[in-house]
Length: 554
Image 1 (cartoon, rainbow, N blue to C red):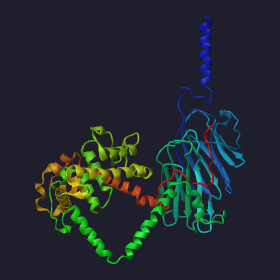
Image 2: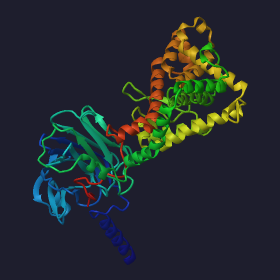
Image 3: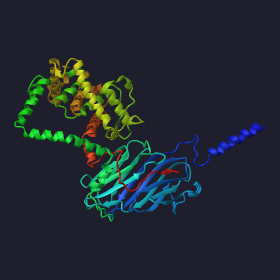
Image 4: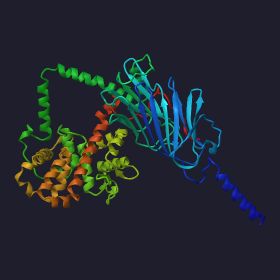
């Protein structure tokens, strides 16, 4: 009997121990589901900041935010609302109080190098905390511009946040590329201008204690009249922030390439007969690839060239300078994935159609660039495996190397297929390859002039899917789809498997994702570095105000 009593006593003791505040053995896991921060900048350079934290907490007695490196910034007017109830501001916060004495109260801990904004948890479970405060002198007046350089979310926050958005707007006038430039640091995501506001968003959860959210904005003079003045140019502030950043890496790579390009331009301009040389180059290229010059003599071709191999067709277009966009091959492959049932279309309930990665046919049946593209779409879609319109462009901005690897593999596979199918050998095109290359241009001409072709109604319906894929490669899929539908609307829906509106949406998405790839590795990168918005840099951001290290539950 004594043993039984001892056993019961031990179980009761363990249960009481586990139920103590701050312990979570075998219990729910704490999380920060989302953080939404809005900073409204007044004409005097102050910022009215509102932060909404959606959390689920099972540890500690309070929540705190670190605000160090303030300089001449003062933080005032702290208020907290938790789950619809306004908290009492008690002034100087006492960290050692228990969870009950901190409930529904907030305050500030003053530190040597800054302060902490604190409030009580009250109880364990889900909370929505809305925190508001004012930052004086947030905008700095420089010699040539005004600037905002704030760390809005600190590294080392526990639990680590899943999703963060930051919005900065002005009381005076909208922000745009004409009067403002913006860069972001510390996270994987995007930043840019939307509806006259600066908006930054994370695209991945914080994966380590190194993640943060830092914004650097440059404003033209005249928007603000801040009393916080610094005797420096913006370039000095920018140089410190760019150190160790992806922006600086891009600029360094451009510098490395500058001399050869400049030399080529100088030599090219200095060469007599430059136009003659260009004409001769085009003539030789056409003779090598197509076997004829000029190409205007190529007539209509109605069959599918290269036996439907769009990688070979793309290689020809690229080598001949006839491909308008490198992203068109991605658009064509997305339509092939759709036709092969590797991906499907799903209605998102808002009268829009998204791409779903759970098709009836498994991706294991794919190989080469088609499989690589599927994996890119899969990674961008995330856990729900539904790829919404804005998801892939945002993802592509943060994964430019993977996008470049895919486009490189497309070119490599196209060249190898041309050789293995007997169209080229040792870099030279064989007569059979030149014939197929001419057929390709003839087929493009045929699709572009489709409306004018009298016998278009006699085209076999079984070819329509291939027509759409090649039309996507040529950048005219929407036009060709509309013309095929006019021939026989019922047959069009039976062959494609979708009604016209839905398929048009799929064509739009495929074009959209293809162009996103090109933007992510070309002009978008330059625009991001120039402050026009785009990708954020994980590294860099030095010289900011606010922030620090730590925060969250304790």
